[in-house]
Length: 82
Image (cartoon, helix red, strand yellow):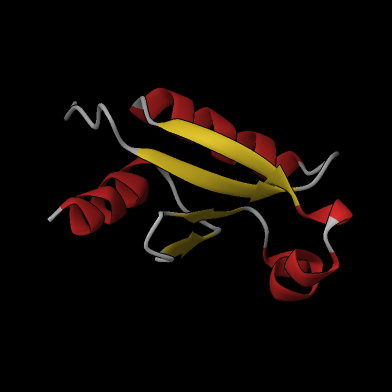
């Protein structure tokens, strides 16, 4: 598996979201550091993401929305690294 050491992304999530838990497992499996952000406490994020969560975002604002698997996530990471 390719190393994505040093990359950190944001995972937009919500408490009790089972799909978000699956997304966390994928990020852990790939080995990418992430910052979980619960959208329920932020009206702007709630309006933006609503039922689209889980969504992964990089510092440049590029997003990967659900559904995705580890291969999809790795391809997305390859795109943002290059």
